[in-house]
Amino acid sequence: MAKKDKEESQLEVHVSEETKKGVYCNLAGFHHTANEFILDFVFAHIDEGELVSRVITSPSHAKAILIALEDNLRKYERKYGEIEEAEISVEIPDLIH
Image (cartoon, rainbow, N blue to C red; front, top):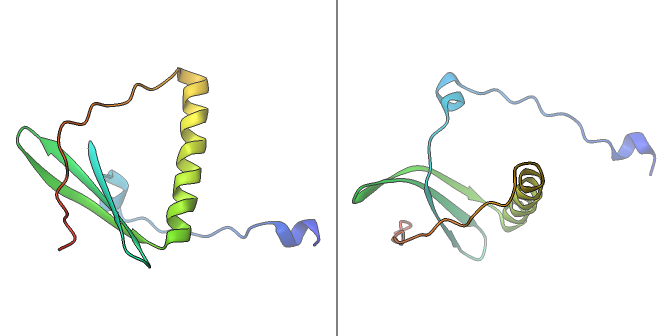
């Protein structure tokens, strides 16, 4: 395969002003079915939480996300030092149903 055949094409992504603001997440829950992974992102405060975003993706894309996140965590820790794992004292209920 020629080098230019291996090059990825660049996707033009349009982002709304609202989406650019992002959302804050300090708790996440992950679920799956045979065909999908569901990633729930929650903003937990005091004694309640709010689901701020839900991503539903295929198993192969979930694995690609994991690999990219692991790579970015390694790069971050090389630059800034080891990240201490957060102590999670609350469990997210199954929000799928």
